[in-house]
Length: 472
Image (tube, rainbow, N blue to C red):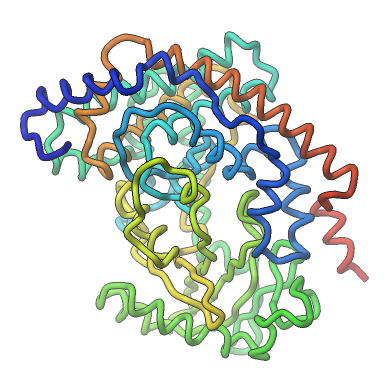
């Protein structure tokens, strides 16, 4: 539909799509007659067996933690809901903890979507509904009354609608260059406590650099750096603290250099010639396995430590890219990339206002596919447990704004989406009902999940219990 030049005509075309799916229909939560535990089991089949109990242990923390780790369940449910027919590149796992701050190549701190493991073309409504549900679940878990939960969710939805209208009027280059920096957020925040919170975040980010990380993760012997084993979070694949099974094929190369060298060489072919030249000035020092997140636990994630001639570090993360959980469920929208790592990189570059200069992809000797990025480069995540209602409201509005920008930039359909949404609150009202009802369903699914852990169908283990197995 983006071939129509006149934005007003394009908005009218978007408005006409209400005949296909009315805005009021978006209260449907879909997903009848499914077993959430079976869906989780299916998503765990290719993961490291010894880390699956940790995955489930992290998900047992709360209904919100379960929601974070079970994107496949909501993808299944969304497949049975109405949609307008407008297809854009999606984040794919658009919950509130997948937004945050990170550094641009110019070393400025921006606020944006920061997780694209599940990115895939699909209905724009799916990202919005996952975001809305995440705020309702999290706010309810923090003890907010239902009407307060609804106010917080509405902040995200109203912000998405209003900013989509704004982006519908932007030229393509205006949209492409738009960045939401923390400096900008601080200037726009009316609440002094929120400004102070944002300023604290900027200060925290300044200390989350590779130089600060190196002494915490490793130590130097002579001219060589080695990362410390700290299982289950960080360990060497071929070392005594490894969580790999003895017969795992990843242990067969015998040492980390033989494992990473072909992956690194293939990765270099996916970055620009200038960044390839820059990487040529670094020397590999060590490789370790790192356990990350909630939903990603059990997938293979490597951290490669490199240093330059000044002994300054660079940490590169090689993260396994599985097929998106959306791939089997989207009603329309085909992913143009067969390589899953390239799919993730493309999603980042399309939706983010600025992306990591070291983004790339590669394949391991066994055919597993990976994407590559810097590890924790001034990355900061929201600490929503510390937010009061006003701050959570502001954060929700900021997430809605960023998502509107990401969809407008990546899909080029801001006028059509704006026309479909309109000026009233019909869509917001419907998705508020959706978020409340889906929060109820997540709590029911969480109880089924917890019962499966209690019965032994799933094995769950805490971080402390797993770490205790390695203590002497």
